[in-house]
Length: 363
Image 1 (cartoon, one colour):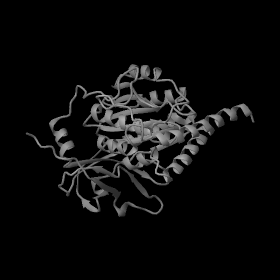
Image 2 (cartoon, helix red, strand yellow; image 1 turned 135 degrees about the horizontal axis):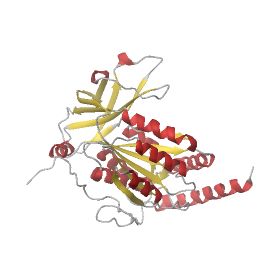
Image 3 (cartoon, one colour; image 1 turned 135 degrees about the vertical axis):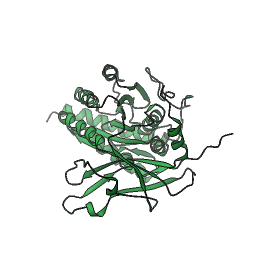
Image 4 (cartoon, one colour; image 1 turned 180 degrees about the vertical axis):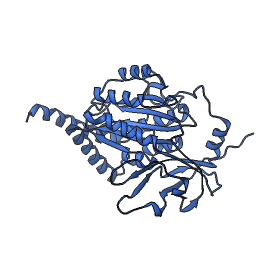
């Protein structure tokens, strides 16, 4: 075994451990002033959180977002054993409840909504998850999208930077991938700030009538909250944006070491009430998934993810709770018991709840 190949990652991980302890101690202090548009970053390219796009939300969409009378879920059905997506299901195949109260499904469809896909690429930490193979896989997955779909690129470590706004132009995506910020092994994986800014960007710039997806490309799944919006703030922003969070993790020996260390120290920090953000938990709560594979297999992994997104169902209902009080409401969507078989159990991945909007009063 080459000792030099081991010593550098070991030193990097030791430094990361020390810096994380310092970061955790300072996480509630020295919060940087946020700019007028809500972002704490000052990227060299496009600013994060642009204003509304040239295609504003329709009055009908705006009314739905404010009153939350119509709640729309993005759901995926998988075979538990094989992980294969299940298509061709009907509205009658599902049962839905909100806070334990059964709801009537009034809207149903499959693969009818355009996609707004934001690739959120980690540029901090000991290992760089973005390689030429990852770049190739992102481009191939973008080529598999439909003409009405759109793609944006955002990078993060200590700050977030919007590299490419939503576009359908392949050349702009290529240019954005060629101009990502450099990897900085001394920088942090500031998930809380990245998720918050990504959610705000999706809410303002994503197609209001489409399916919003954030695909995080990183080497770790948990990290202490940096200064700025807390992980809870980011979680709420993600839920309010209606985005599904997914993750792609290029697997390697070094990646497993770094991710394992991060899970351990954030777990220890949690015992002392130190806040952290977790990609797996957010994906689970929004109905997304986190896929891990070797770099050589990432074309297939991205293809699976896009395929899963294409076989998702749109499930809508009007809540029996008429209050518009800003409360969090738990949701549970399952397939009907008659479809469940011992040898081929079906699981439903969708968001676990939503935040009821407050009705605005006009003067």
